[in-house]
Length: 519
Image (tube, rainbow, N blue to C red; front, side, top):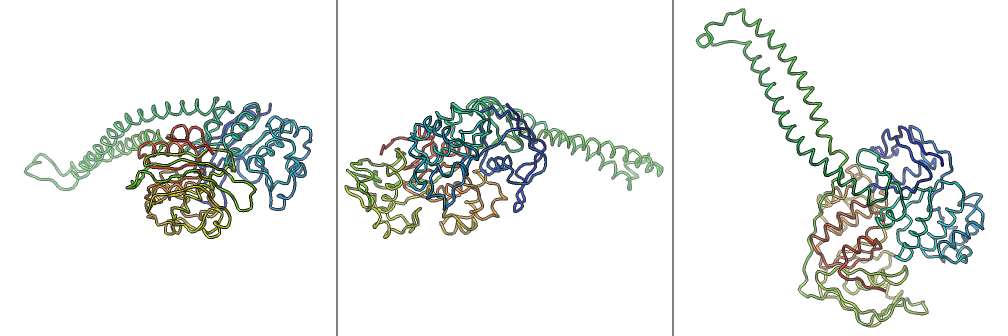
């Protein structure tokens, strides 16, 4: 297969002061199954767009094969059309029979190709687009976060499908998916880009060993830096003392000194100052080298949380609960019975459309959640006209909830305004965002200009700073980088908040859940 060569690549957006890439060089084989890993906002999607020729840049990118990108763009006018009608627009020259073969490998009925896109679920659209994407020959495929918003069953299908393919770059923060599907990783680190063979886990093990070694070496070098700085101060003291002896003297203490001694002292002082200057330059260079050892070590900072404990042990209780939209023929779910007690972390699990978010809406409404808007933009009064519930749903009195919405489209304006509207301290808010690796240069931008992962971090930081009895997080990790996921796992393990969570990251659920409720 061909190679993709990047040489001295530099790029920054016109509206931004911070460069995305600076003098980056590396080489990839286009037959690899490559996982692309890095913090939010570090340029993963930007790099894919550079490969597609969407932006101007300095340096060079050479690739002898055609690149194709997932997800394909769907405009509002496309929603009434079918995938069969759009596939030529998405992938010029694609053959229908090849798409049919790929659809079969995804365990999807080919009938989906002939249904309007607006009738397809998010998971169905994903599978149709992947079938078109892989229906070409010798293309190098750029796959950008294919499992966001997919339920566990759909994720498993996509995972097994991609595991059989090759010749792609996969941008994903799903550790389980990366381990199953890739044989090389491309990692955007703090000051460099690294290419390694292996999957996520092998790279992470190597990284932890390398970081531990760098930290140990840094401890030794900090002591050496102290010694070097001490030597510099001593040499500066010698030069200053010599300079001071040129002017005046005590005839009693220095009775053997003559007036001609001043010229001699001045000459010796100049030589000493020259030697001191050279010494300081050498020491300064050594100190800079030693202080730079941790430049590429990813510091996963500990987050803090102040959960409240409710005087009642049972915070939420449902008995034989059913949920139905007013215009639906049958309920979304029936017979649901579960409870959330203080200290429990309850995960809702089930297929897309099984009612997880609807159940969260009902709990928020019953608890009198302070926000007058939901992620659909509907007020509580409007919601009552949309769905009805049967059975029993009880929430503890005066229950304070901190909520992360799965949707980020309502975020707008600057960070200061967002903090004020959500009642959180602005300085603490910025501090938490910095701990989640949001660069300070981002603080001057409007939130709508953030990447999706950065928007999610805004919601996470807001929730962490909102004291609550119950934290309800609806798909909080979509688009959020691996390092921040590990930060949140450490936080939850340490502070043990009471939580109701919808999240399809298998590793996160396995580590954090005390109870799983299947819908």
